[in-house]
Length: 99
Image (cartoon, rainbow, N blue to C red):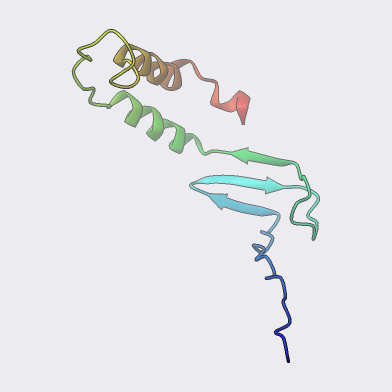
């Protein structure tokens, strides 16, 4: 009796990107391109100032809901907490330092 030869499916691997790629307005520069898809490669990100300005504008334009009716987190993240986080992203977070 003939049996079907069992073969393992070959995993699909995304093609390597060029040493410089664009992602949502940011420029990602990859160093030491290699043919090993799981290799760790350093990269640098540069986000244009216009993108950061627009992000800050959208954060500051957020329409907030009414304050929650309970004192715990059973209705989700407390409004004051998320407002403090948004304020931090819009005013205090150093995007260039992290870049």
